[in-house]
Length: 261
Ligand code: PLP
Image (cartoon, rainbow, N blue to C red; front, side, top):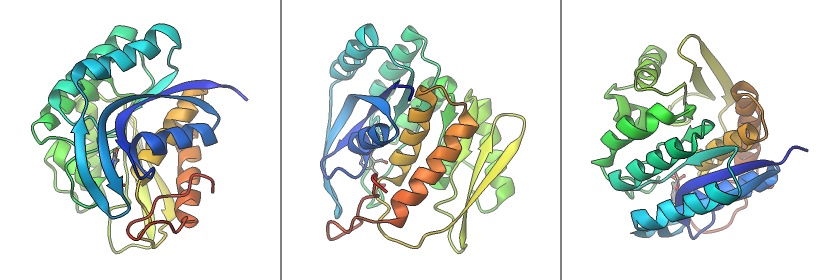
């Protein structure tokens, strides 16, 4: 077993289903060494987000530097970044350390509708962070917000992928989970040259809280251990499929995925 050092730069979910908590649980299950830099604290459970408390830019930078100057990072992921100021500071630190295995999960809005990224910060994501991404993992609404393309077909999804590569990302995975009316979920991977469609059966469940975070964290863990992106994607698909298939059944609302599955 190769121990990879994996850092998550993201928000805390007190309910343990998404954010930093989902990331660290995923790192642990996949035998990567998990570390965190918290960008915001949310008061949250399966019923929704009750409060959002961003950290100062200094606090975020200090956490990243504490890790970067001592332990080292083989791969990192970003999740909820909340503001343009935090995004700029995170991008600056990634460049400073020369980290290349960077997974950008462009978290914007929680399933219940709470804003996890200020609208004005979308431009900062495009300008500062996406150019540093080894892979960016938007769902369809996030891909639409980043590119301005309304995605109703696979061709439009491919167009959105191209725009994200034009912004500087090395690879793009536009996830298909938000596409309705199909028995399949098709994720689309683009490396700037070729498209790969990865298809799985859709699992009908409302217990999908934290799926996006968990998926990106699984990719990060595998990259940290030295896998290439296509192998990392296979592991992440399998991990998330199992996590959704066996819900824990806790909480009265949208329950978390099951990281033990
Ligand atoms: N809360 C935090 C801190 C997150 O990082 C995320 C990630 O996307 C969410 C909530 C969203 O969770 P959900 O899967 O319910 O949309």
